[in-house]
Image (cartoon, one colour):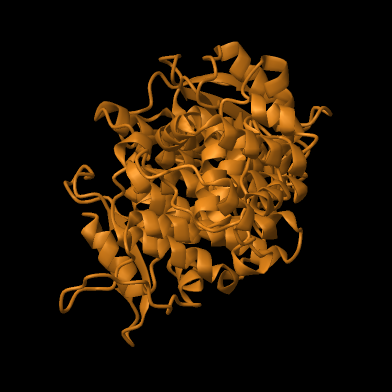
Length: 574
């Protein structure tokens, strides 16, 4: 149940005309009263003899009864109350009772019988509008301070009593929801998203890792959006608006939205805050023709490179340190998810788009982000975008699984961070994003882990037994669990790959097991596989024809991996 208190107005007849009218896109159907202050107000929707003027005069009577200089300049109070998507259709009687509870909770019509006059109009299945005039029957003004918060609190009670979706309370940082007119228009055109939602997603992707305003606007144009900019007489850029080429109004003109109307962090000033630190480090280049822009070595390389700053972000979120730095990591994590969704293969694309869309809500709060603290993560997003689409198989697919496993941990840490700060909507959004990431990770990890398990099963028993002994020595309390898991074969193959690379399998296993979240893992062995492969800088994907067992003598003399000689890494549970 989502209440919204709108700006106060000065024309009762104007709002009534809208509520009883057809709507801007003919979306209002059968407008009629479901409740009023006295239960007997005229209903121009159902009573042919009743008029809008008659209802307006009735509601305005207390306003007109007091001296003109005492009348409030904006005397029209307006609140809409909407059921959450997926809720059952409520009856007129139920909506009427909800309206009575909302006006009582907000102070518009209290229990002393001298409240304001009001009426509740329903013109759609999923919501009702309440109009009231802000002079009580006794001539005094109502105490409706913080009426929006009070309406929210009452709606939480209504949800529980009516068995409706429990909506987490907001904090004013959410993106603006599509209007009823926009949703009905999308339904008529059989669109999966409203233009506002599609534009929000497109602008977010254009922002992912962008280093300058010009690059941002170039990406918007390349995505096929119509872009308008607003400049001052001095020539300075003041703002921008975007539109979909096919989204037209009744006059056939494109419907433009400003960045701030799409989401609070997509306004030009907020975008400039993110761009301010800059991303000046050169990206690693390979085989460039003259005039080509530098590119990372490929999608797999860019994804592997993103794993370290993503893990650093997870650590920062869990360490409960600088809130401004943590907020910046959340914003940059959203950019990294957008970059991955933009460049992912068909096997993971849909889930990553859903994860990025859900995390969009978790990427901002009232805490001011110190964007310079997230420079490495934004650079990683930039390199993923410029590396191009992933093939989704081989090293590309395995590297995708590696970075998604880390991002899952980041998003879970984000949910905890928001919960600690009482950010209910953001925490819920992060948890939703984590579920989509879980699915995407499992899809990406299936093939490389299957190959590693096959390699592990092909290893001689003596070699497998040696690594089993290593597990018992390093992880005495977890060894039986690890060795009984289906992922043990992949872990054995990974330890063997590490030994072939000259590392000490026991030292790697000890460090990997010392990272967080191990005990809550669905598969401890799978978690250890990704940690070890990242710590030892092993290829994420090991073709079945390249791994051979390591002789015992070689394994005994393999040099240990020093904790100071590699990046710290960790993996979440899946």
